[in-house]
Structures are given as C-alpha cells and as structure tokens.
Image 1 (tube, helix red, strand yellow):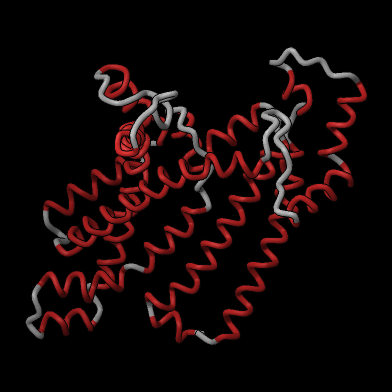
Image 2 (image 1 turned 180 degrees about the vertical axis):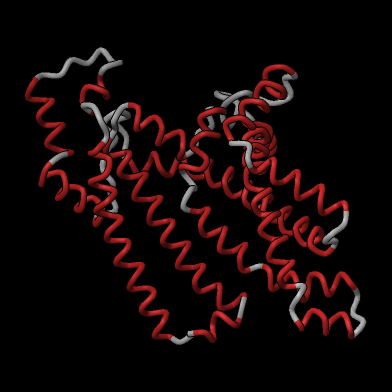
Length: 321
C-alpha cells in the first residue's frame, strides 16, 4: 500500500471527524420534549423564567455551538446540567467499565468463534459441523435482552450465584485482590450475555471464510507436502481467514455504546450505555453530546487503525493499492 493512499485515507477520516463533531452537537437537539423541564421535573428545584432562558441559551442557537466548539478546542466538554459534573469526568468514569465489559466480551467471543469456526470448517460435512452450525444459527437469533433477562432471573434472582446489579459492591472497603474478584463476580452475567450475542456470528463468519480458504491451491499444496493437519489448519488456512474477523471487529466498535446499552441497563452496570440512557432520560444535552462525540471519534480512530492493519494481515490488500 503506497504512502499516498495512507494520506488520502487519513484526510477522509479527518473530514469525517469534523462531520461527527457537528452531528454530535445538532442531533441531540432533535430529541422530543423540553430538556429543561425533563432535567428538573423530579427535583425540588424551581427555576425562574430567566434561569430557564439562560440554560436554553447555553444549549441552543449560535451561542451554544460556539461554546461547544470552544470546549472541544480547550479539551473541556462542558458540564452535565443534570449531574452538575464535567462531561469529561463522567465519560472517563464510565469508560473503563464499558471497555472491560465490551472488550472482554469481544476478546472471548472472537477467540472462541475463531477456534470453533476453524474446527467446524475443517470437519465440514460431519455431524459436529451440522449440529454446531444449527445451534449457532438459533442462538444468533436470540436478542441480548432475552438472554440477559433469563440469565438474571436464573443465576442472580433464583440461584443467587451472582449479583443482580452494579459493577462492584457499593461502599465496601476491600483490598486490591478482593476488589478485582468482586468486580469479576459482578461482570460474569453481563459478560456471558454479550459473549452469547457475539460468539455465534464470529463462529459462522470464521467457518464460512475457512471453507472458502480450504479450497485454495496453497492449502492443497501444504497438505500434499505432508505437513501436520494442525499446522495446515492454523498456520496456512486459518491465517488467511482472519481478515473478515478484523472487519467484523471494526464494525462492532461502532456499537460500543449502543450495543451494550441494553445489557448495561438490565444489570444496572455503570458503563457508557447506562450513562447515555440516563442522559437521554433527563435530556441532558451536554452529556449526550459528549458521549455521542466520543463514541464517534473512537469508531473513526479504530476503523482507521484497522485500515493500516489490513495490509499487515493480508499482503494482497497492501499491494492492491
């Protein structure tokens, strides 16, 4: 891949980032209802007409856009009007929880989907492949909300094996090791819910890619050389079936917040999805804008990084440009 292609690609993503900055500002304003009334309807605070006008002026019109851009340039993303806290602080507080849940679920589902998909494709036509493909097709059709509710009822409410909500035990003074174990204990059910949602798709994608790769001439040559089946399977065939997995990973990043929104809400998990849900509920425009912008820029950055990694994974992509 030539350097000129990288420059053009970076320029395109930079322009897309500018579009996302404007979109993150304007789209939340299309939410129905009055955001000032929504923010203060459940509180004992009574606003005067002047105070309501000042709040609306901060979030609407030219003054709102200019202030929004100034906050971005100064790395200050404004204040949450509902929580009276800097938006950047709220995002940084919720982000590690979402990365732990989302990253862990993706890593586990990709690893399991890749291994089982490769093995199923290698045994194509056998009963193992037929049963696994059928089961994965059924599981993929089950939405996260159903899986999450079932796991919550059985393992949290009925059996009591895992906590029903939260990311850790509230107000507990624990050592570092005990806190890690406590966080892991709270993470199990949300993580399993997402793994069950992502694993079938990764499995079916890997199996389909692997079936096509196994027909290639270089795989037949490796077999003819008498190489061990495991080496042919992973060192030659599976390596060339990785690119669709990376593409799927890049696309999934776009759903980092919205994809975990349902799961985090079910388990009251303190991540970005829950934060966005609460912000929308009270029409907290600065917080909504900050989350939308951060998520959009994160998607652009990851996809740009994936473009560079494609050439490293598959030389055919690099030399195509």
